[in-house]
Length: 247
Ligand SMILES: [Zn+2]
Image (cartoon, rainbow, N blue to C red; front, side, top):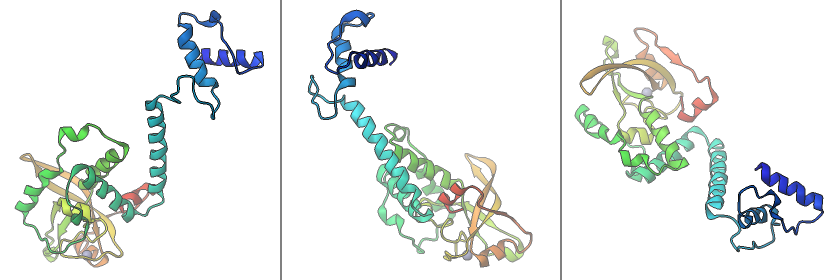
């Protein structure tokens, strides 16, 4: 780079762009190589290169990708949380398979725990998925991974006895936004006035008992049920980007 600058300075000093460099600054590189590089630096936008190609294809592709990524990032910022959610999960489906119908919110699937266990293996990523990650693919995966361990679904039917059941969401629920944009009580479909509550979720993973603090998004009525016996900790949105996941 420094040497290129030298060349530029020299050309400007010489008062002309149509330069024919001598080999005096070659310092080990062939004059042909150097001339090629200098040509690229000095070429005017409307000129065709001496070697016909304007820029190396990789350079052009890289620039294009960067520009695209910038545009997409800008586009994402202008979306609301649910629009962004829809975009990320449709990207996810596009890159990792699944059905677009899953995007629709459905009330017709009360699953048994066995169904849940059976379906959850689909959350595991295969090694080949890690290869050939694009910016968009990576973002969709990150969003998806985060979502799955962030929200849970609750069974509040025995709240009067102070008994609550929690489980992870199934893939369909993650995609449709159940428990995130729709109340996380498994028997409730309210979408308005949701609040996030922190719950200590005990679960079993690979035969081991584990605990995790996860969020439960509930409508006002279901929030009352959850907090009937003792008040849970409300999770308030602090950072602006928590809006991204609706919590
Ligand atoms: Zn509810």
